[in-house]
Image 1 (cartoon, one colour):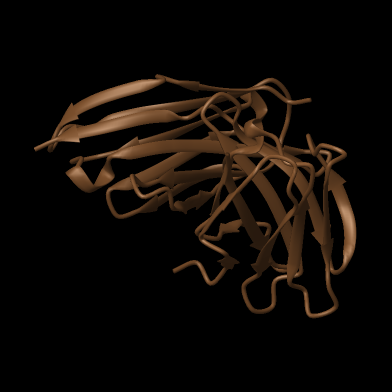
Image 2 (tube, chains in turn red, orange):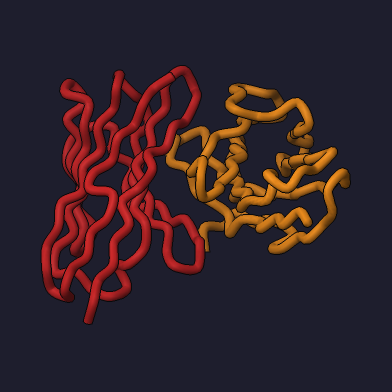
Length: 107
Length: 112
């Protein structure tokens, strides 16, 4: 199956800092998504981004499908951004998640 | 609120028992996915149904089974429960117009 590698595994920021999270795939994937799991366990869809660039407020994402990676940018981080960020992609209808990037934003 | 509902929120049971988890997808969504999240295994895909038919199967144990009903809600049945089955179980749904998955709040299963 497809392997999904996320980096960094852990990230600690001061409020207001910017960060870039990366997701590498071992093979081509469909339906690439980014999710945020908040401290209460809820998984929230951030972006559906099989290719190209999208922006939503302070968050943006870029996927370079030909090179099998995706990036999530968080600008001007806030304490509410804390949690775990996952990327996921599908190969042959099988969704595979990365292990996530655990983000802590300190006030 | 994603529009996906899951019941119950919490479930505590004993080894050897059987439980049923329920999921109602967002209105209009035809696909339902089931996932297991544990600390050591991360988020693992179990099974997907599309409009009542099984579409893809992941790391689902033989002790586990699922189905999607004509009204599109889905149930995940877990039997002969073991301590290692303790986890957060999520369902997600996606529609025919978009493959974006929207997750429910999860069911936390504790097997004692």
